[in-house]
Length: 167
Image (tube, rainbow, N blue to C red; front, top):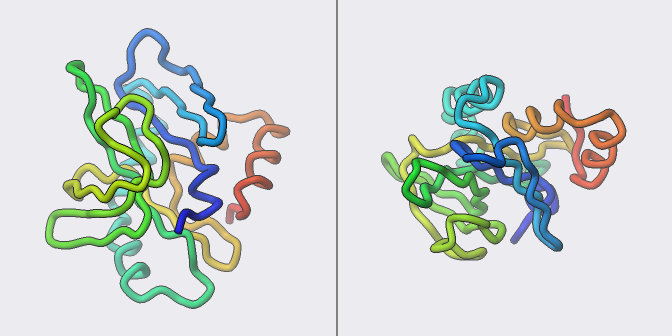
């Protein structure tokens, strides 16, 4: 089942070209934020997500009754220039060095992928993870970077639409 907070969380594109820093808006789909590959804050968020992935896997393996919205964000290459579209997967399952799940929204540039498609990727391509516990976002490090870049009014509106709070 697609979780409301996942639908509202943004997609991210790394290694984008001339229109870096732009937002692609789509009706009925989350916005896509184009982020340059050298974005230090976003790269730090990805590293934090990757280093804490074992804690997410542990919670996912034995979730509490008040936890929901489990998802992982995975980078999928597209084009010939080393660009990646980071897409949220729900119903995530880990096995060895791989993660699989259902694509939660329609990708923009990785056109071989479709919403609802089950895909498998290498764990090294995970760029974020998230879930909601008692109404509070856990993980979601790349989402937090984007929220921090919003004006106070945009941030407040986005958080109210996402259905969770930040710690």
